[in-house]
Image (cartoon, rainbow, N blue to C red; front, side, top):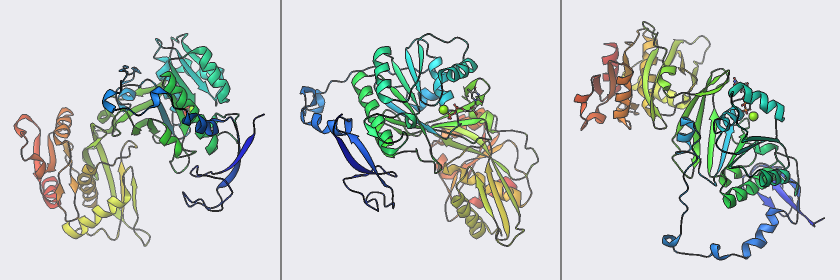
Length: 458
Ligand code: TYD
Ligand code: MG
């Protein structure tokens, strides 16, 4: 048995120390240090030794002389996933897919690999038995290829051994929190276990050029459980999110060494797996709100795609003392700011009113171009006057009530026109220099919130 080393590690951030300390110097949390034993042959220790013996490939060299292997990306046969990854899976990369339990991470990964029968893929599950995986696979796909190989295993050493035997072209680990290495005496899911297992898998990916997909759980605060360190180790972090009450699931890229991080993919959970949604506006618009007040359609952009979505507001007299302001899918502080603008610049009295704002479909949007539709929906509910069904809008609202320009206006206009909207309210500054004659949709450029409200409500 190799000699053991004792170390103390913060369970919150992964900071290491030689002796126990009460307060972590890195993250400032109290009482988070716990003792762990690391075997002397463990990667954490042996790394230091091997770093000293650099081989030829490890010498400093001019960047112009570095040769790159131009390996094509692996097509995952799923447009949404390919796009979020920046055009497919990069060979030798390590991707972390995070999400709350039950959101559909295992389903997404399993259905993707089942649809890639041409490649030998190893799916390692530390959570489910192989019969359970088979039952899930049967639900998703009828023709299952012999090249899709499953393994129910928790030990990192045995997983690496099996990878050696199977020689897969892609490896999936479901989930990183259930895998443990024997070199560390600590329970699976703990910070050191997660870090050591991820580093070992990273070394495997980089040396073999086989991409590794890690599934990771998210804890209650929405952070990836286990160390933040995991996010630093991997090349790409994807987050799968959605509301349990809605069937839509959103795949976001949070970090991507090989592509943009503003990408977004949308799926719908069905009986037989997740269906990619290529035209999200059709799902997000109900189009039967004729004559209803408190609804405004916004043309927002999330990632690179424009979406038309319904903003709903309800304004009612506050029944109990302090008025409530509540939002679903939109930043509440931003709503407070917009209400203050309405009050101060447009002269509407909302102080004694409860205001509820909801983005239909369970989507969470951050695009500032939503401002105008939030204000319009609030006002529409307040005065109980509906907005024309075929009208939509986009525009950021500033503190002095000015309507500020938004990005990619042409794309927004084109999308609204494609979906059959007849009129669009948009920032005046956006259309200077824009050839508007090619659009059939009526454009109503505005400078101030009042102007927009006058156009909408007469
Ligand atoms: P799962 O992939 O197990 O979630 P995670 O790995 O993120 O914990 O998905 C869980 C939910 O998805 C479960 O409640 C059942 C549902 N589901 C479907 O609705 N349709 C399907 O085809 C499958 C496989 C699962
Ligand atoms: Mg799972």
